[in-house]
Image (cartoon, rainbow, N blue to C red; front, top):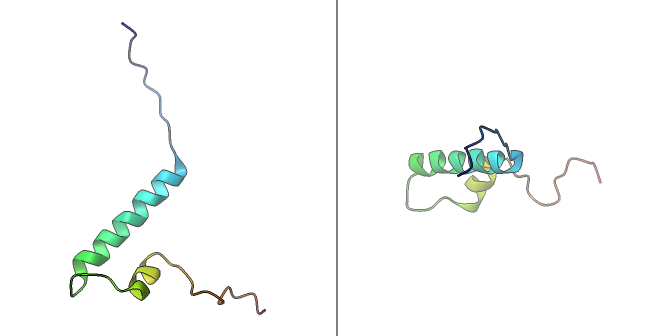
Length: 57
């Protein structure tokens, strides 16, 4: 039987996704009502509304 290797593998994308899920859970636990509004979800995830990229168009 092969021995267990102690290797550390980090998937940076997965770590970011886990952090964002945590932020959503915190927001959901603090929110009134059953669901988070789309605007609040965007705010928690730091998503800018479409068309407001700040490039000055």
